[in-house]
Image 1 (tube, rainbow, N blue to C red):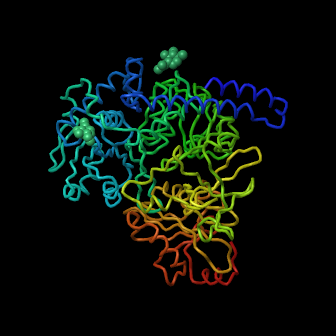
Image 2 (cartoon, helix red, strand yellow):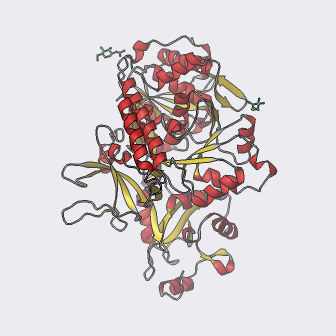
Image 3 (cartoon, rainbow, N blue to C red):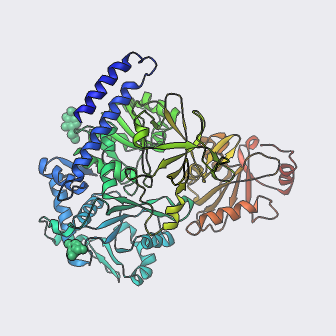
Length: 619
Ligand SMILES: *[C@@H]1O[C@H](CO)[C@@H](O)[C@H](O)[C@H]1NC(C)=O
Ligand SMILES: *[C@@H]1O[C@H](CO)[C@@H](O)[C@H](O)[C@H]1NC(C)=O
């Protein structure tokens, strides 16, 4: 290791002369040194007996600073020691009341609250893998999540009792034991867990109970969002989970920081980078059940928060609030997350005075990540000389029509030149493994791209379109499959759906692009279901869409559907809707179109339709 550092020192002196040409050279070096340091630390810990996982890291925190606050939630503060005790109670309770043993899987349908953390740690203590269910999923998708990873036990938050009851007969048929986080439960087939935990011993749990776990054992299953079909359970091994804990360190989080997490713990960002990172750093997390625009800064002030985690929308919502005198009264000096657009980035930084914003790029079902360590506005990461060697990857040419990579005459993929958008593919190697999806070899294989640059090589198809600039900065452009082109722009259907679903009368929405003869690209349609006893409000929809979406992304058409089976095969629903087109005499009414001159959506008549088809009306 010393030799390497010495080599780096010499190298940096040599390159000083060229510094003007390489303005980010020192950033690159500092970052690489950190990466190498972490790498050697991981290699050391991998050899430890007994095994060293995130759990052991947590237990070290407990003995190092038992009385330091670990979780702050609503008005409660939990220091490290009591969290350890609570997780012991979980372990003892589950040993006593279930058949769960080492190697089994339990599922959590629990929101952001301390119990989530107690349960996860407790399950790790008895050697179980934990399936982290998205708390928004219901019925068919919920059952599907069970089927992917042979789950024996479901533990659900009390607020999800309806969702659980809905699938209870099926769960019982499969022999799944169901627990609800409450003190008593009079529903047949569901047991209460809170009371049992309260009564349980909080003494340490024997190491023997997890003696057979290895770094390759699945630690958690994280589901990729179900917007393009049914949810898939991404396998996160102990080794990968442990690797993920170092993101915070790489993103500049220090041992005395207080981090604010309002992102869901069932996603990789909130769970691995967020919570697991907190354990690696040994710091305090202010956990929020849900992001709240109005409470955000109050929370930060109250708890002296120094680091916040975001997704782009969070910072956009904060920027959309009226300016206040107190905007800069807080101690937040760092924001880490992803999906921040350049304009919001600058506005957020100048208005709230948050000094550092660091984007990162990573996916729960990916095998590598990027970080924007020089904090360049708009970028998700940066390439550098060594990183590419350590994590081989490429941007390759992608055909949006066939929705696949372009192959040359020899059948090889084609790297795009700097500045051009390409599909990110990352080589699958021993050091950068792809663990795939539990119980789904088909989807696992689908993510793999073979014979990319030479015979027999295998790359992971991230499904993300990125672009690099001449300095090596990486910019996120789009996600394939969920996007269509309109007016030379890529429209992300998920983003449009997210915005439209904020309308208070909308129950469900499905956004897609469809072709109209004589028009380039695809025109946007939002097919939606209106809430019971509510009506579609044309003006409100227009105002909302114009306020929140760029011109090209605003759906030109809105269709009202009576039913929209989003839990089924979403893609098929989309495809059949796409084929139906927009002829008001053929599709079930009503159908509206966006008319700028009336500042509203107006009902589409056959006359309108004809003039659009004939090309009289251009968009
Ligand atoms: C570990 O595995 C061995 C052999 O596979 C088995 O005999 C033993 O019972 C396992 N230990 C535990 C704690 O399950
Ligand atoms: C926050 O910091 C201020 C000033 O340093 C200190 O007086 C206060 O007690 C801190 N609050 C908390 C909750 O730590």
